[in-house]
Length: 273
Image 1 (cartoon, one colour):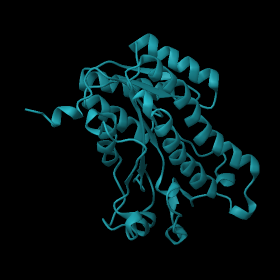
Image 2 (cartoon, rainbow, N blue to C red):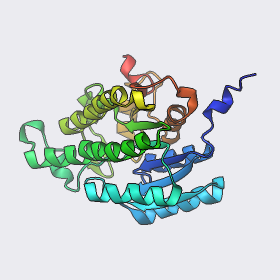
Image 3 (spheres, helix red, strand yellow):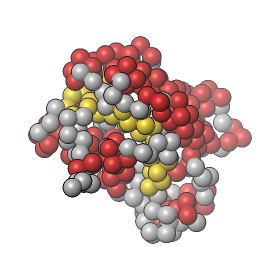
């Protein structure tokens, strides 16, 4: 008798999670570990990545290692992949998750008519070029292993639909007024397009490529923003970080063996309106 639940198991698999020390990334690492995968916690913040790896080892009893990587540097990405193979021997799952905003938030949140080209290029470099580099070098490993693999990339609801700028009136995040810049939407839309391309390109090699697209996740926004955003969502609230994890486990596992090129929106129904 077929055990359908067993298809969700990741026991014995090796998963690489970029941005693994972040707010969502740490949940993603722990979720994959809870399904049995050994985890490479990849992040530029190596101290926090080491903390996440330690938590995983203690709580889930599997192998986890923190690995430094500057994802915008091809040499650093190559070194990261080499380190993962040295530590684990193979790569079965890639969660191409890392993204960034800007150290200069005034420039990042500037009006479109005043947006600086250098700021635009910085975000595209961080959010799109890094995805390309990691997918390129990990995908090559998966192809050479001849055992296939699963690549999951993280986009954003604003890579699918435009923001409702009315929700930002009186809205603050970490004590500063915020918005969603066009470059953020464009970069996340690029992630979805890259997923579709790679899904068709690597299908013959048994490598599945999909996207998960989170809606707004609570992470320090003020009460006005949470209320404004929740009023735009059929479920009436923002998401919690752990609510993103189930879709990742599914796409990483054999339960999704016939799923590729897809974008799963985890948005509380926002895009249905």
